[in-house]
Length: 122
Image (cartoon, rainbow, N blue to C red; front, side):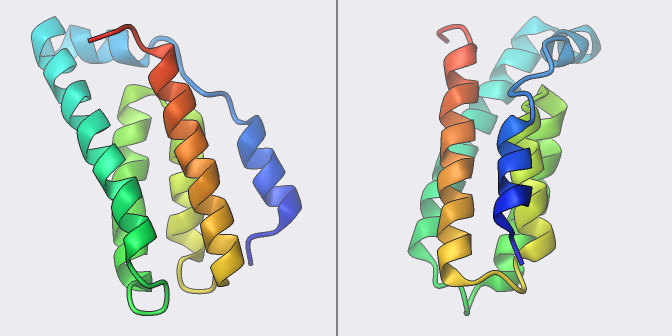
């Protein structure tokens, strides 16, 4: 189960690893990193909206798979809190109750919005 103390610990996770994007820029260049980050923002926004439209009971396995992907890409860009919350969804998708699921989604939405605010305007 997704316990309140665990949820609070996830909210305490830092929003951003400040050097992560710079490392990506060194690997693939500034233009490439910027393009990949723009795709990440767009796909993550769409994914979080989709999560709210799918039924929990029918799509638990999909939530776990999508959360795994989100965790990986959020980690690549250094969005630590979003990655931690996605990991929590990945690990608990099969057992979450509906209230816990929607609470976790709200936390993911907040982490996404907070991370987005940390970024310069595109």
